[in-house]
Image 1: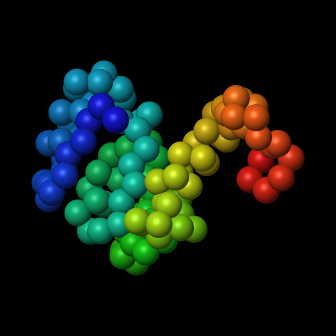
Image 2: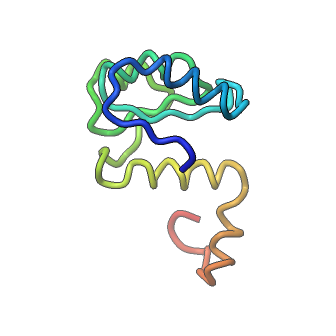
Length: 105
C-alpha cells in the first residue's frame, strides 16, 4: 500500500491529499468503511462500500455492503470482487495454478 493513515477522525483532508499526490480522480476510488466518520468520504468517491458489521447509517450510505464483517475478510472480499469486475481474476487463478471452475470463479 502506498498510503496508510490510521487513527484520523477528519478524513476529508486525507482524501484530498491522497487524490492530489496520486493524481487519481475521486470517481476512480473505492472506499470501505464501517462507522459514521466514513460516510463523508464515501459520498465523495466512485465506489463506496460498507462492511457487513457497519453501522446501519453507513450501510444506507454505501453503494455495496460486504457479506463479510470488517476484520474477518471484508477487504479481501472487495479485492476479489474488483479483480473479477476488471477481468483479472481468471488470470490470477491461472498464475497460481488453481482450477477456476469451482466456487468464486
